[in-house]
Length: 563
Image 1: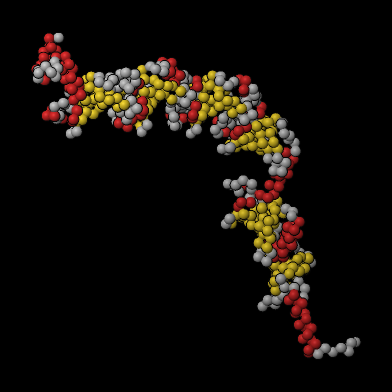
Image 2: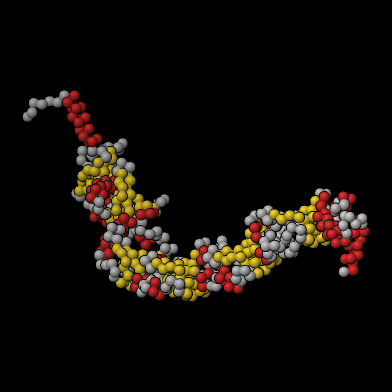
Protein backbone atom coordinates (compact mmCIF):
# COMPACT_ATOMS: atom_id res chain seq x y z
CA UNK A 1 0.00 0.00 0.00
CA UNK A 2 1.39 3.35 -0.93
CA UNK A 3 2.52 5.76 1.74
CA UNK A 4 1.41 8.70 -0.44
CA UNK A 5 -1.21 10.78 1.32
CA UNK A 6 -2.08 13.77 -0.91
CA UNK A 7 -2.64 17.05 0.77
CA UNK A 8 -5.46 19.46 0.01
CA UNK A 9 -3.07 21.51 -2.17
CA UNK A 10 -2.05 18.44 -4.14
CA UNK A 11 -5.69 17.59 -4.77
CA UNK A 12 -6.43 21.15 -5.94
CA UNK A 13 -3.47 21.03 -8.33
CA UNK A 14 -4.63 17.72 -9.78
CA UNK A 15 -8.16 19.08 -10.19
CA UNK A 16 -6.89 22.20 -11.96
CA UNK A 17 -4.78 20.06 -14.28
CA UNK A 18 -7.77 17.88 -15.08
CA UNK A 19 -10.06 20.84 -15.73
CA UNK A 20 -7.43 22.56 -17.85
CA UNK A 21 -7.10 19.45 -20.00
CA UNK A 22 -10.85 19.30 -20.46
CA UNK A 23 -11.00 23.00 -21.43
CA UNK A 24 -8.27 22.42 -24.02
CA UNK A 25 -10.61 20.03 -25.88
CA UNK A 26 -13.37 22.61 -26.25
CA UNK A 27 -13.86 23.80 -29.86
CA UNK A 28 -12.49 20.56 -31.30
CA UNK A 29 -13.79 17.35 -32.83
CA UNK A 30 -13.50 14.46 -30.34
CA UNK A 31 -14.36 10.75 -30.37
CA UNK A 32 -17.53 9.80 -28.54
CA UNK A 33 -19.36 6.60 -27.59
CA UNK A 34 -23.10 6.20 -28.10
CA UNK A 35 -24.53 5.13 -24.76
CA UNK A 36 -28.20 5.47 -25.62
CA UNK A 37 -30.66 6.35 -28.37
CA UNK A 38 -33.87 8.05 -27.33
CA UNK A 39 -36.82 9.24 -29.36
CA UNK A 40 -35.33 12.60 -30.42
CA UNK A 41 -31.81 12.53 -28.98
CA UNK A 42 -28.66 10.47 -28.99
CA UNK A 43 -26.69 10.31 -25.74
CA UNK A 44 -22.93 10.31 -26.32
CA UNK A 45 -20.12 9.84 -23.80
CA UNK A 46 -17.22 12.12 -24.77
CA UNK A 47 -14.97 10.94 -21.95
CA UNK A 48 -13.82 13.07 -19.09
CA UNK A 49 -16.76 11.56 -17.22
CA UNK A 50 -19.07 13.73 -19.28
CA UNK A 51 -22.02 12.92 -21.50
CA UNK A 52 -23.90 15.08 -23.99
CA UNK A 53 -27.12 14.98 -25.97
CA UNK A 54 -27.34 15.47 -29.77
CA UNK A 55 -30.62 15.91 -31.66
CA UNK A 56 -31.24 12.78 -33.71
CA UNK A 57 -31.92 14.85 -36.86
CA UNK A 58 -28.25 15.95 -36.97
CA UNK A 59 -27.28 12.44 -38.01
CA UNK A 60 -29.58 12.34 -41.00
CA UNK A 61 -32.48 9.98 -41.58
CA UNK A 62 -30.53 6.92 -42.71
CA UNK A 63 -27.68 7.28 -40.22
CA UNK A 64 -30.06 7.94 -37.35
CA UNK A 65 -32.04 4.76 -38.08
CA UNK A 66 -28.84 2.68 -37.86
CA UNK A 67 -27.49 4.19 -34.62
CA UNK A 68 -27.26 1.95 -31.54
CA UNK A 69 -25.52 1.93 -28.21
CA UNK A 70 -21.81 1.17 -28.46
CA UNK A 71 -21.30 2.96 -31.80
CA UNK A 72 -18.33 5.29 -32.07
CA UNK A 73 -19.06 8.74 -33.47
CA UNK A 74 -17.13 11.95 -33.89
CA UNK A 75 -18.71 15.02 -32.38
CA UNK A 76 -17.84 18.69 -32.00
CA UNK A 77 -17.27 19.64 -28.33
CA UNK A 78 -18.46 23.18 -27.75
CA UNK A 79 -18.40 23.13 -23.92
CA UNK A 80 -17.32 20.44 -21.48
CA UNK A 81 -20.11 21.16 -19.05
CA UNK A 82 -23.16 23.38 -19.02
CA UNK A 83 -25.44 24.38 -16.17
CA UNK A 84 -27.05 20.95 -16.32
CA UNK A 85 -23.66 19.29 -15.94
CA UNK A 86 -23.83 17.95 -19.50
CA UNK A 87 -21.38 18.39 -22.39
CA UNK A 88 -22.56 20.64 -25.24
CA UNK A 89 -21.81 18.65 -28.39
CA UNK A 90 -22.86 18.69 -32.09
CA UNK A 91 -22.68 16.08 -34.79
CA UNK A 92 -23.48 18.66 -37.50
CA UNK A 93 -20.60 20.92 -36.54
CA UNK A 94 -18.34 17.92 -36.43
CA UNK A 95 -19.31 17.01 -39.97
CA UNK A 96 -18.66 20.64 -40.98
CA UNK A 97 -15.20 20.62 -39.45
CA UNK A 98 -14.45 17.32 -41.15
CA UNK A 99 -15.63 18.78 -44.44
CA UNK A 100 -13.49 21.95 -44.02
CA UNK A 101 -10.40 19.85 -43.34
CA UNK A 102 -11.11 17.68 -46.35
CA UNK A 103 -11.84 20.70 -48.58
CA UNK A 104 -8.63 22.44 -47.55
CA UNK A 105 -6.66 19.44 -48.78
CA UNK A 106 -8.61 19.46 -52.06
CA UNK A 107 -8.17 23.24 -52.42
CA UNK A 108 -4.41 23.05 -51.90
CA UNK A 109 -4.18 20.31 -54.54
CA UNK A 110 -6.30 22.33 -57.01
CA UNK A 111 -8.74 19.46 -57.45
CA UNK A 112 -12.50 19.73 -58.04
CA UNK A 113 -15.03 18.94 -55.31
CA UNK A 114 -18.47 17.38 -55.64
CA UNK A 115 -21.37 19.48 -54.42
CA UNK A 116 -25.06 20.22 -54.86
CA UNK A 117 -26.78 23.55 -55.51
CA UNK A 118 -29.34 23.70 -52.70
CA UNK A 119 -30.60 27.28 -52.59
CA UNK A 120 -30.62 30.79 -54.06
CA UNK A 121 -29.13 33.78 -52.25
CA UNK A 122 -28.40 37.38 -53.23
CA UNK A 123 -25.91 37.42 -56.07
CA UNK A 124 -25.77 33.66 -56.52
CA UNK A 125 -26.47 30.27 -54.95
CA UNK A 126 -25.50 28.08 -51.97
CA UNK A 127 -23.74 24.77 -52.61
CA UNK A 128 -23.64 21.91 -50.11
CA UNK A 129 -20.35 19.99 -50.18
CA UNK A 130 -21.02 17.11 -47.78
CA UNK A 131 -21.41 19.26 -44.70
CA UNK A 132 -19.73 22.47 -45.77
CA UNK A 133 -21.65 25.28 -47.44
CA UNK A 134 -20.14 27.33 -50.25
CA UNK A 135 -21.19 30.37 -52.28
CA UNK A 136 -21.60 30.06 -56.06
CA UNK A 137 -21.68 33.55 -57.71
CA UNK A 138 -24.19 33.95 -60.54
CA UNK A 139 -21.35 34.68 -63.01
CA UNK A 140 -19.72 31.34 -62.18
CA UNK A 141 -22.71 29.11 -62.95
CA UNK A 142 -21.96 28.59 -66.64
CA UNK A 143 -19.78 29.81 -69.51
CA UNK A 144 -22.74 31.71 -70.94
CA UNK A 145 -25.51 33.42 -68.93
CA UNK A 146 -28.12 30.92 -67.75
CA UNK A 147 -31.74 32.04 -67.63
CA UNK A 148 -33.15 28.97 -65.84
CA UNK A 149 -31.06 27.33 -63.12
CA UNK A 150 -33.83 24.93 -62.01
CA UNK A 151 -32.41 21.93 -63.95
CA UNK A 152 -29.09 22.35 -62.07
CA UNK A 153 -30.62 22.49 -58.58
CA UNK A 154 -30.28 19.40 -56.35
CA UNK A 155 -27.94 17.70 -58.81
CA UNK A 156 -24.53 16.57 -57.57
CA UNK A 157 -21.81 17.91 -59.84
CA UNK A 158 -18.18 19.02 -59.71
CA UNK A 159 -17.11 22.52 -58.62
CA UNK A 160 -13.78 24.29 -58.43
CA UNK A 161 -12.89 25.97 -55.12
CA UNK A 162 -11.85 29.56 -55.85
CA UNK A 163 -11.38 30.82 -52.30
CA UNK A 164 -11.44 29.52 -48.68
CA UNK A 165 -11.47 31.62 -45.49
CA UNK A 166 -11.85 29.28 -42.49
CA UNK A 167 -11.91 31.98 -39.76
CA UNK A 168 -14.82 33.67 -41.51
CA UNK A 169 -16.35 30.44 -42.73
CA UNK A 170 -16.39 31.57 -46.40
CA UNK A 171 -16.00 29.22 -49.38
CA UNK A 172 -16.41 30.48 -52.95
CA UNK A 173 -16.86 27.87 -55.70
CA UNK A 174 -17.25 27.88 -59.50
CA UNK A 175 -19.03 25.57 -61.89
CA UNK A 176 -17.90 27.65 -64.87
CA UNK A 177 -14.21 26.91 -64.22
CA UNK A 178 -14.90 23.17 -64.48
CA UNK A 179 -16.81 23.64 -67.73
CA UNK A 180 -14.10 25.86 -69.22
CA UNK A 181 -11.43 23.36 -68.32
CA UNK A 182 -13.41 20.54 -69.90
CA UNK A 183 -14.10 22.67 -72.92
CA UNK A 184 -10.43 23.60 -73.23
CA UNK A 185 -9.45 19.93 -73.12
CA UNK A 186 -12.09 19.10 -75.71
CA UNK A 187 -11.03 22.06 -77.87
CA UNK A 188 -7.37 21.02 -77.69
CA UNK A 189 -8.33 17.55 -78.79
CA UNK A 190 -10.50 18.85 -81.65
CA UNK A 191 -7.93 21.44 -82.77
CA UNK A 192 -5.39 18.63 -82.97
CA UNK A 193 -7.63 16.96 -85.54
CA UNK A 194 -7.69 20.05 -87.81
CA UNK A 195 -5.09 21.27 -90.29
CA UNK A 196 -4.59 24.56 -92.13
CA UNK A 197 -5.82 24.39 -95.70
CA UNK A 198 -8.34 21.66 -94.85
CA UNK A 199 -11.89 22.01 -96.20
CA UNK A 200 -14.72 21.35 -93.73
CA UNK A 201 -18.50 21.55 -93.60
CA UNK A 202 -20.04 23.55 -90.78
CA UNK A 203 -23.14 25.31 -89.51
CA UNK A 204 -23.44 29.07 -88.96
CA UNK A 205 -23.89 29.43 -85.21
CA UNK A 206 -23.82 33.20 -84.72
CA UNK A 207 -23.50 36.38 -86.83
CA UNK A 208 -21.79 39.59 -85.73
CA UNK A 209 -20.93 42.87 -87.46
CA UNK A 210 -17.45 41.60 -88.30
CA UNK A 211 -18.20 38.01 -89.34
CA UNK A 212 -19.86 34.71 -88.49
CA UNK A 213 -19.01 31.87 -86.08
CA UNK A 214 -19.20 28.45 -87.70
CA UNK A 215 -19.55 25.20 -85.70
CA UNK A 216 -17.16 22.65 -87.16
CA UNK A 217 -18.45 19.84 -84.94
CA UNK A 218 -17.82 20.77 -81.32
CA UNK A 219 -15.46 23.66 -82.04
CA UNK A 220 -16.15 27.12 -83.49
CA UNK A 221 -14.17 29.01 -86.10
CA UNK A 222 -14.47 32.65 -87.16
CA UNK A 223 -15.40 33.39 -90.76
CA UNK A 224 -14.44 37.07 -91.13
CA UNK A 225 -16.60 39.26 -93.36
CA UNK A 226 -13.62 39.95 -95.66
CA UNK A 227 -13.21 36.19 -96.26
CA UNK A 228 -16.84 35.51 -97.18
CA UNK A 229 -16.70 36.71 -100.77
CA UNK A 230 -14.32 38.31 -103.24
CA UNK A 231 -16.84 41.10 -103.75
CA UNK A 232 -17.55 43.85 -101.22
CA UNK A 233 -19.79 42.71 -98.31
CA UNK A 234 -21.16 45.47 -96.07
CA UNK A 235 -22.58 43.09 -93.44
CA UNK A 236 -22.31 39.28 -92.99
CA UNK A 237 -26.11 38.98 -92.99
CA UNK A 238 -26.03 39.84 -96.72
CA UNK A 239 -24.34 36.48 -97.34
CA UNK A 240 -25.26 34.16 -94.44
CA UNK A 241 -27.97 33.43 -91.89
CA UNK A 242 -27.88 31.49 -88.61
CA UNK A 243 -28.34 27.78 -89.30
CA UNK A 244 -26.92 27.86 -92.84
CA UNK A 245 -24.82 24.87 -93.92
CA UNK A 246 -21.52 26.18 -95.30
CA UNK A 247 -18.34 24.75 -96.74
CA UNK A 248 -15.24 26.55 -95.51
CA UNK A 249 -11.49 26.29 -95.66
CA UNK A 250 -9.31 26.48 -92.55
CA UNK A 251 -7.05 29.48 -93.22
CA UNK A 252 -5.13 29.61 -89.96
CA UNK A 253 -4.95 27.90 -86.56
CA UNK A 254 -3.34 29.83 -83.71
CA UNK A 255 -1.62 27.24 -81.49
CA UNK A 256 -1.47 29.61 -78.51
CA UNK A 257 -5.06 30.87 -78.46
CA UNK A 258 -6.48 27.91 -80.43
CA UNK A 259 -8.43 30.36 -82.54
CA UNK A 260 -9.47 29.11 -85.96
CA UNK A 261 -9.81 31.45 -88.94
CA UNK A 262 -12.05 30.28 -91.78
CA UNK A 263 -12.64 31.39 -95.35
CA UNK A 264 -15.30 30.87 -98.02
CA UNK A 265 -13.93 32.94 -100.88
CA UNK A 266 -10.74 30.84 -100.85
CA UNK A 267 -12.81 27.98 -102.33
CA UNK A 268 -13.62 30.20 -105.35
CA UNK A 269 -11.31 31.36 -108.13
CA UNK A 270 -9.66 34.72 -107.44
CA UNK A 271 -11.16 37.26 -109.86
CA UNK A 272 -8.04 39.43 -109.44
CA UNK A 273 -5.87 36.92 -111.26
CA UNK A 274 -4.70 38.42 -114.58
CA UNK A 275 -6.76 41.54 -113.84
CA UNK A 276 -4.23 43.67 -115.75
CA UNK A 277 -4.86 41.53 -118.83
CA UNK A 278 -8.65 41.60 -118.49
CA UNK A 279 -8.71 45.35 -117.85
CA UNK A 280 -5.84 47.01 -119.70
CA UNK A 281 -4.98 50.68 -119.22
CA UNK A 282 -7.01 53.02 -121.50
CA UNK A 283 -9.59 50.25 -122.02
CA UNK A 284 -13.24 51.30 -121.82
CA UNK A 285 -15.64 49.12 -119.80
CA UNK A 286 -19.11 49.21 -118.26
CA UNK A 287 -19.71 48.81 -114.54
CA UNK A 288 -22.13 49.46 -111.69
CA UNK A 289 -21.72 52.04 -108.89
CA UNK A 290 -21.58 50.07 -105.61
CA UNK A 291 -20.49 52.69 -103.09
CA UNK A 292 -20.12 56.48 -102.95
CA UNK A 293 -17.71 58.27 -100.61
CA UNK A 294 -16.46 61.83 -100.14
CA UNK A 295 -13.40 61.09 -102.26
CA UNK A 296 -15.03 59.21 -105.15
CA UNK A 297 -17.16 56.24 -106.16
CA UNK A 298 -16.48 52.49 -106.41
CA UNK A 299 -17.46 50.75 -109.62
CA UNK A 300 -17.93 46.97 -109.85
CA UNK A 301 -16.41 45.73 -113.10
CA UNK A 302 -17.28 42.11 -112.30
CA UNK A 303 -18.17 40.14 -109.18
CA UNK A 304 -15.24 40.64 -106.80
CA UNK A 305 -13.41 43.29 -108.84
CA UNK A 306 -14.06 46.94 -108.02
CA UNK A 307 -12.26 50.05 -109.15
CA UNK A 308 -12.22 53.57 -107.72
CA UNK A 309 -13.22 56.64 -109.69
CA UNK A 310 -11.58 59.49 -107.81
CA UNK A 311 -13.64 62.66 -107.50
CA UNK A 312 -11.13 64.47 -109.72
CA UNK A 313 -11.82 61.99 -112.53
CA UNK A 314 -15.62 62.18 -112.44
CA UNK A 315 -16.48 65.24 -114.52
CA UNK A 316 -14.72 67.57 -116.95
CA UNK A 317 -16.55 70.64 -115.70
CA UNK A 318 -18.03 69.96 -112.23
CA UNK A 319 -15.23 70.76 -109.81
CA UNK A 320 -15.37 70.57 -106.00
CA UNK A 321 -18.71 68.76 -106.14
CA UNK A 322 -19.60 65.74 -103.97
CA UNK A 323 -19.58 62.51 -106.02
CA UNK A 324 -23.17 61.83 -104.94
CA UNK A 325 -24.29 64.80 -107.06
CA UNK A 326 -22.72 63.30 -110.17
CA UNK A 327 -23.58 59.59 -109.85
CA UNK A 328 -25.90 57.42 -107.76
CA UNK A 329 -25.62 53.94 -106.23
CA UNK A 330 -26.47 51.06 -108.62
CA UNK A 331 -26.11 53.34 -111.64
CA UNK A 332 -24.60 51.73 -114.73
CA UNK A 333 -21.68 53.77 -116.05
CA UNK A 334 -18.94 53.63 -118.68
CA UNK A 335 -15.40 54.04 -117.36
CA UNK A 336 -11.85 54.05 -118.69
CA UNK A 337 -9.04 52.19 -116.89
CA UNK A 338 -6.35 54.65 -115.81
CA UNK A 339 -4.08 52.41 -113.71
CA UNK A 340 -3.96 48.77 -112.52
CA UNK A 341 -2.02 47.48 -109.48
CA UNK A 342 -2.74 43.75 -109.25
CA UNK A 343 -0.50 43.25 -106.18
CA UNK A 344 -2.50 45.80 -104.17
CA UNK A 345 -5.79 44.81 -105.83
CA UNK A 346 -6.43 48.34 -107.01
CA UNK A 347 -7.87 49.64 -110.25
CA UNK A 348 -8.06 53.38 -110.87
CA UNK A 349 -10.89 54.39 -113.19
CA UNK A 350 -11.97 57.54 -114.94
CA UNK A 351 -15.58 58.50 -115.59
CA UNK A 352 -14.94 61.70 -117.53
CA UNK A 353 -12.45 59.95 -119.84
CA UNK A 354 -15.32 57.84 -121.19
CA UNK A 355 -17.05 61.04 -122.30
CA UNK A 356 -16.07 63.60 -124.94
CA UNK A 357 -13.59 66.19 -123.70
CA UNK A 358 -15.57 69.47 -123.93
CA UNK A 359 -12.35 71.46 -124.37
CA UNK A 360 -11.39 69.39 -127.40
CA UNK A 361 -14.95 69.70 -128.72
CA UNK A 362 -14.79 73.47 -128.23
CA UNK A 363 -11.55 73.97 -130.14
CA UNK A 364 -12.89 71.79 -132.95
CA UNK A 365 -16.07 73.84 -133.23
CA UNK A 366 -14.41 77.20 -132.51
CA UNK A 367 -10.82 77.30 -133.74
CA UNK A 368 -8.43 80.02 -132.67
CA UNK A 369 -9.34 83.29 -134.36
CA UNK A 370 -13.06 82.53 -134.58
CA UNK A 371 -15.78 84.68 -133.07
CA UNK A 372 -18.17 83.28 -130.42
CA UNK A 373 -20.96 84.72 -128.34
CA UNK A 374 -21.44 83.90 -124.66
CA UNK A 375 -22.93 85.04 -121.37
CA UNK A 376 -20.92 86.88 -118.73
CA UNK A 377 -20.78 84.52 -115.73
CA UNK A 378 -18.60 86.60 -113.47
CA UNK A 379 -16.48 89.75 -113.43
CA UNK A 380 -13.32 89.54 -111.33
CA UNK A 381 -10.33 91.74 -110.62
CA UNK A 382 -8.42 90.14 -113.49
CA UNK A 383 -11.11 89.79 -116.15
CA UNK A 384 -14.46 88.51 -117.37
CA UNK A 385 -15.55 84.86 -117.32
CA UNK A 386 -17.80 84.05 -120.25
CA UNK A 387 -19.86 80.83 -120.27
CA UNK A 388 -20.48 78.60 -123.30
CA UNK A 389 -22.19 75.29 -124.03
CA UNK A 390 -21.23 72.10 -122.10
CA UNK A 391 -20.68 74.18 -118.94
CA UNK A 392 -17.25 75.46 -119.94
CA UNK A 393 -15.95 78.98 -119.39
CA UNK A 394 -13.49 81.22 -121.16
CA UNK A 395 -11.77 84.29 -119.76
CA UNK A 396 -11.32 87.77 -121.22
CA UNK A 397 -8.33 89.30 -119.47
CA UNK A 398 -8.52 92.95 -118.42
CA UNK A 399 -5.93 93.81 -121.03
CA UNK A 400 -8.08 92.30 -123.79
CA UNK A 401 -11.24 94.31 -123.11
CA UNK A 402 -10.52 97.62 -124.84
CA UNK A 403 -7.71 99.05 -126.98
CA UNK A 404 -7.79 102.48 -125.39
CA UNK A 405 -9.58 102.27 -122.03
CA UNK A 406 -7.86 100.93 -118.91
CA UNK A 407 -8.97 97.45 -117.83
CA UNK A 408 -10.53 98.53 -114.54
CA UNK A 409 -12.55 101.17 -116.35
CA UNK A 410 -13.44 98.88 -119.25
CA UNK A 411 -14.70 96.00 -117.07
CA UNK A 412 -17.12 98.35 -115.34
CA UNK A 413 -19.12 98.39 -118.56
CA UNK A 414 -20.07 94.72 -118.15
CA UNK A 415 -22.29 92.95 -115.65
CA UNK A 416 -23.30 89.35 -114.96
CA UNK A 417 -25.79 88.06 -117.52
CA UNK A 418 -24.64 90.30 -120.38
CA UNK A 419 -24.29 88.54 -123.74
CA UNK A 420 -20.98 89.49 -125.33
CA UNK A 421 -19.20 88.73 -128.55
CA UNK A 422 -15.60 87.54 -128.15
CA UNK A 423 -12.72 86.30 -130.24
CA UNK A 424 -10.98 82.98 -129.42
CA UNK A 425 -7.32 83.82 -128.76
CA UNK A 426 -6.01 80.50 -127.38
CA UNK A 427 -7.24 77.09 -126.08
CA UNK A 428 -5.12 74.92 -123.72
CA UNK A 429 -6.91 71.53 -123.62
CA UNK A 430 -4.60 70.04 -120.95
CA UNK A 431 -5.01 72.96 -118.56
CA UNK A 432 -8.68 73.39 -119.58
CA UNK A 433 -8.27 77.09 -120.33
CA UNK A 434 -9.82 79.27 -123.04
CA UNK A 435 -8.40 82.75 -123.60
CA UNK A 436 -10.77 85.27 -125.20
CA UNK A 437 -10.57 88.85 -126.37
CA UNK A 438 -13.15 91.56 -126.99
CA UNK A 439 -10.90 94.33 -128.28
CA UNK A 440 -9.50 91.94 -130.91
CA UNK A 441 -12.86 92.03 -132.69
CA UNK A 442 -11.55 95.31 -134.21
CA UNK A 443 -8.11 96.28 -135.39
CA UNK A 444 -5.85 98.23 -133.12
CA UNK A 445 -6.48 101.87 -134.09
CA UNK A 446 -2.90 102.72 -133.26
CA UNK A 447 -1.41 100.34 -135.80
CA UNK A 448 -0.54 101.36 -139.39
CA UNK A 449 -1.74 104.75 -140.75
CA UNK A 450 -5.25 104.73 -139.37
CA UNK A 451 -4.75 108.28 -138.07
CA UNK A 452 -2.40 110.97 -139.41
CA UNK A 453 -1.56 114.40 -138.14
CA UNK A 454 -3.73 116.99 -139.89
CA UNK A 455 -6.41 114.39 -140.69
CA UNK A 456 -10.04 115.46 -140.33
CA UNK A 457 -12.16 113.15 -138.20
CA UNK A 458 -15.78 113.23 -137.14
CA UNK A 459 -16.12 112.96 -133.38
CA UNK A 460 -19.10 112.31 -131.15
CA UNK A 461 -19.47 114.15 -127.84
CA UNK A 462 -19.59 111.67 -124.94
CA UNK A 463 -19.31 114.09 -122.01
CA UNK A 464 -19.37 117.85 -121.41
CA UNK A 465 -17.23 119.24 -118.57
CA UNK A 466 -16.32 122.74 -117.42
CA UNK A 467 -12.88 122.42 -118.95
CA UNK A 468 -13.86 120.96 -122.30
CA UNK A 469 -15.58 118.01 -123.93
CA UNK A 470 -14.88 114.26 -124.11
CA UNK A 471 -15.25 112.79 -127.59
CA UNK A 472 -14.91 109.44 -129.34
CA UNK A 473 -14.24 108.62 -132.97
CA UNK A 474 -13.20 105.80 -135.27
CA UNK A 475 -14.48 102.18 -135.29
CA UNK A 476 -17.43 101.64 -132.95
CA UNK A 477 -15.94 98.25 -131.84
CA UNK A 478 -12.63 99.93 -130.94
CA UNK A 479 -13.24 103.69 -130.65
CA UNK A 480 -10.55 106.25 -129.86
CA UNK A 481 -11.24 108.81 -127.16
CA UNK A 482 -9.89 112.31 -126.73
CA UNK A 483 -10.45 115.41 -124.65
CA UNK A 484 -10.94 118.75 -126.44
CA UNK A 485 -10.02 121.66 -124.17
CA UNK A 486 -12.04 124.89 -124.16
CA UNK A 487 -9.30 126.73 -126.00
CA UNK A 488 -9.57 124.19 -128.85
CA UNK A 489 -13.34 124.41 -129.19
CA UNK A 490 -13.24 127.34 -131.62
CA UNK A 491 -10.95 129.86 -133.35
CA UNK A 492 -13.25 132.59 -132.10
CA UNK A 493 -12.80 133.20 -128.37
CA UNK A 494 -16.45 134.07 -128.03
CA UNK A 495 -17.35 130.60 -129.30
CA UNK A 496 -15.09 128.72 -126.87
CA UNK A 497 -18.05 127.85 -124.65
CA UNK A 498 -18.79 124.26 -123.57
CA UNK A 499 -22.54 124.95 -123.32
CA UNK A 500 -22.62 125.06 -127.12
CA UNK A 501 -22.21 121.24 -127.09
CA UNK A 502 -24.37 118.38 -125.91
CA UNK A 503 -23.73 114.65 -125.51
CA UNK A 504 -24.31 112.95 -128.87
CA UNK A 505 -23.34 115.94 -131.03
CA UNK A 506 -21.25 115.01 -134.03
CA UNK A 507 -18.51 117.53 -134.92
CA UNK A 508 -15.58 117.63 -137.32
CA UNK A 509 -12.13 118.13 -135.80
CA UNK A 510 -8.52 117.88 -136.88
CA UNK A 511 -5.93 115.41 -135.55
CA UNK A 512 -3.21 117.57 -134.02
CA UNK A 513 -0.94 114.96 -132.43
CA UNK A 514 -0.41 111.17 -132.33
CA UNK A 515 1.45 109.46 -129.41
CA UNK A 516 1.55 105.74 -130.18
CA UNK A 517 3.51 104.90 -127.06
CA UNK A 518 0.85 106.46 -124.87
CA UNK A 519 -1.91 105.29 -127.23
CA UNK A 520 -3.21 108.87 -127.42
CA UNK A 521 -4.61 110.93 -130.33
CA UNK A 522 -5.24 114.66 -129.80
CA UNK A 523 -7.94 116.50 -131.82
CA UNK A 524 -8.93 120.16 -132.10
CA UNK A 525 -11.96 121.96 -133.60
CA UNK A 526 -10.02 125.23 -133.58
CA UNK A 527 -7.19 123.72 -135.64
CA UNK A 528 -9.67 122.48 -138.26
CA UNK A 529 -11.25 125.96 -138.52
CA UNK A 530 -7.86 127.54 -138.94
CA UNK A 531 -6.89 125.00 -141.58
CA UNK A 532 -10.13 125.65 -143.47
CA UNK A 533 -9.48 129.42 -143.28
CA UNK A 534 -6.00 129.03 -144.64
CA UNK A 535 -7.21 126.84 -147.48
CA UNK A 536 -9.94 129.37 -148.36
CA UNK A 537 -7.49 132.26 -148.46
CA UNK A 538 -5.16 130.28 -150.68
CA UNK A 539 -7.98 129.42 -153.07
CA UNK A 540 -10.07 132.58 -153.21
CA UNK A 541 -7.78 135.46 -152.37
CA UNK A 542 -4.52 136.73 -150.94
CA UNK A 543 -3.35 139.13 -148.33
CA UNK A 544 -2.70 141.80 -151.07
CA UNK A 545 -6.03 141.60 -152.88
CA UNK A 546 -7.74 143.93 -150.44
CA UNK A 547 -10.64 141.53 -149.99
CA UNK A 548 -11.87 141.07 -146.48
CA UNK A 549 -11.83 137.69 -144.72
CA UNK A 550 -15.61 137.70 -144.70
CA UNK A 551 -15.66 138.19 -148.47
CA UNK A 552 -13.18 135.35 -148.96
CA UNK A 553 -15.07 132.95 -146.72
CA UNK A 554 -18.34 133.93 -148.36
CA UNK A 555 -16.87 133.17 -151.75
CA UNK A 556 -15.50 129.87 -150.44
CA UNK A 557 -18.88 128.92 -149.08
CA UNK A 558 -20.62 129.89 -152.35
CA UNK A 559 -18.08 127.85 -154.25
CA UNK A 560 -18.68 124.89 -151.99
CA UNK A 561 -22.43 125.28 -152.52
CA UNK A 562 -22.10 125.29 -156.29
CA UNK A 563 -19.96 122.22 -156.18
